[in-house]
Length: 110
Image (cartoon, rainbow, N blue to C red; front, side, top):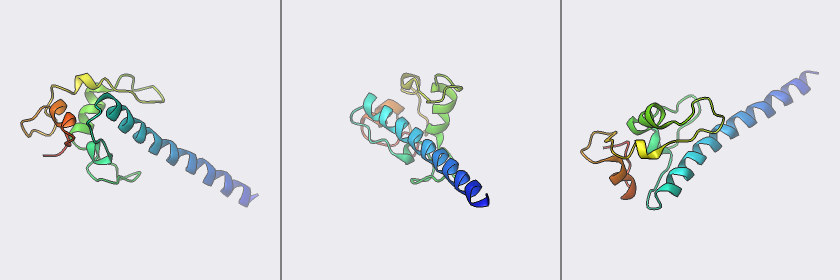
């Protein structure tokens, strides 16, 4: 009985971790699809380049994404209105997010 319970818990944990990673990858794919010259990766939105669950602090661009561009916070698959982020300068470096994205630069890091 304990082995069965442990196996179920491992399977559930694997699904949860996989879906979290897929959501992040979906966001990257969406951004890269909207802006073909973008080079979106984990560090586009996160402080650490390879963010881990529980240590996935977001940078200024990631914070703006969640606060200003998230279409439906209750939706299972998160979608964003990227146009709302275009005129902003999330990282405060004097460049608009859209200009940094199109140049393949990181709008969340100076």
